[in-house]
Length: 247
Image (cartoon, rainbow, N blue to C red; front, top):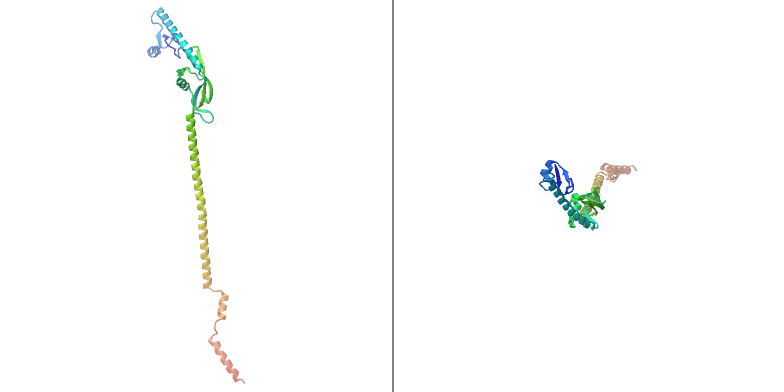
């Protein structure tokens, strides 16, 4: 069916234009929201009157949009804070919603669908983004994408915590190594003491054995120094007696 657009519809056209749309789309969506009226309603004269009324509304709207565009031109640069890494790459990308929210914070309410980002913005820097306010009225705005200070502060704090944890782990590891180094000499000295004790015991046993079992030299000396037997003593007087008888 043919309808007359009462308001600008991005997917159809500007107010006052006659467009052909699906019956269900017109009856269930466009007409209940008073976005369109059927083009066949009333006489041709009524239809022409409706179009003139819409044209007047369009002129007023156009004048309002031109004033709004002039105000947007006065914005030197639109600053948009985004979380970014050290390589200036964003965590995500800039969307028309981000720009619409920043504009709204400065008192400029723009439908995000009118903000056109030709290519995805994924890094810090300056960009030009066009805003299509209505047919025939577009305004480019400068957008400076800068790092989010709150996000940077959180990242710095996180990095500091990581550094502290690293230092703590290194300190613990150093203490462990120091303790292991101190334990090693004790083990060595204990081992050396055990070896020395065993050696002393062996020397003591050897000395005791030598005292109990004298050497052959000592045995012969003991025999030489022993007193003569009785038989040897008895032979001596008999020889003397014989010597006395011989003369």
